[in-house]
Image (tube, rainbow over all chains, first blue to last red; front, side, top):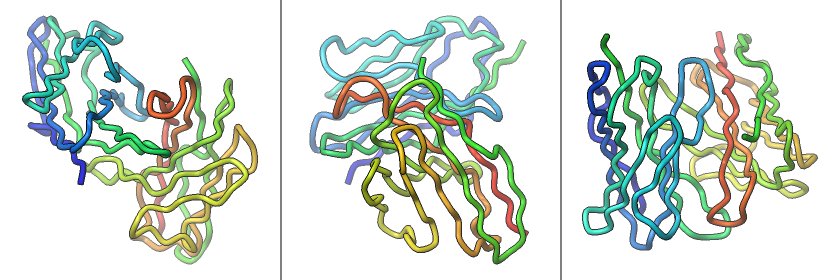
Length: 114
Length: 118
């Protein structure tokens, strides 16, 4: 069965510091990988996605993620955190098939300290 | 980007009543919509996949008679929680497929509906 593991339910960084949110997946076939962000009282917004091609994917708001097949990872990074980055981040995997359902990790809450 | 709305954003009801939640794709047509349930400090759990003009496909463990899904048009899907009980209290989120095809289709999420059953 496919699964997604996000290490750390809560990550706290200082403003201007590096943001690193970890995501590992298990899948027997090449997955399609996504990062979503959820701000308080709002729906999920797509940050970035990996489907095929270049393994380093750039998304919105300065975020990027790198697909590492050998490590089955898709960690999300941002060089310099802003206060506005405080939110819940979800990693998700989508496996091939007619429906291609998304399987979500449990989420990581990012706090940014001034 | 594509916009998905949900109505209502919050609902409180008495045990035993039914509640309908609407999910609309505002600026695109969605042949497929998904319904998720999110528990506090938990991930999103897919409940069912709704396809326009056909019956929804429910995930294992989800009662289809309790969570009625209707996808009558390319822009509207509804989730009705029938005979709601306190354990049905949760955050329900819909998403609509838009752009691309098949595996590369991006899902756009609604803002969610907070249901509280007293």
